[in-house]
Length: 135
Image (cartoon, rainbow, N blue to C red; front, side, top):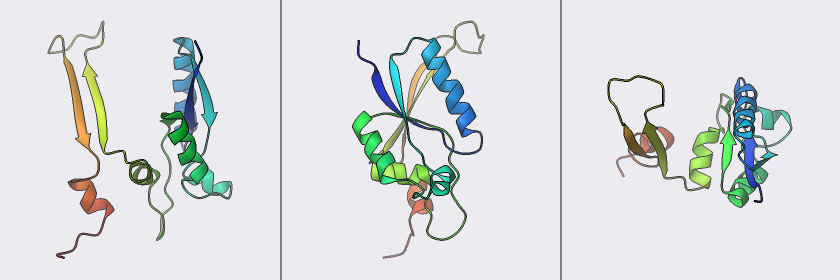
């Protein structure tokens, strides 16, 4: 089986530590993955790139999947957060969150198996990420 290519965006702050641990867990689980490291956030700016470089977006489009750590958005005018840019530039209109019980962990409810879909482009996000006017 050929390995799957995954874009790895280490991010900033605790991001590199978190994504390193996540990638080691996936490797230990035997997931056939090859990571392509790309940057976003403050780490991209420190390398003379944009907050979300086009090369990072292109790589995600090519691979179809990314593992991203937390990214810092610089304070000030002209910067849009990496998460907002990813949603807009890749048309990521929904966040899908599966919810299941973990084996060996007792909970109030047995056999929980839910999928929560949160719409990412309307509602609260439209007021936070865009200027709302009466027109």
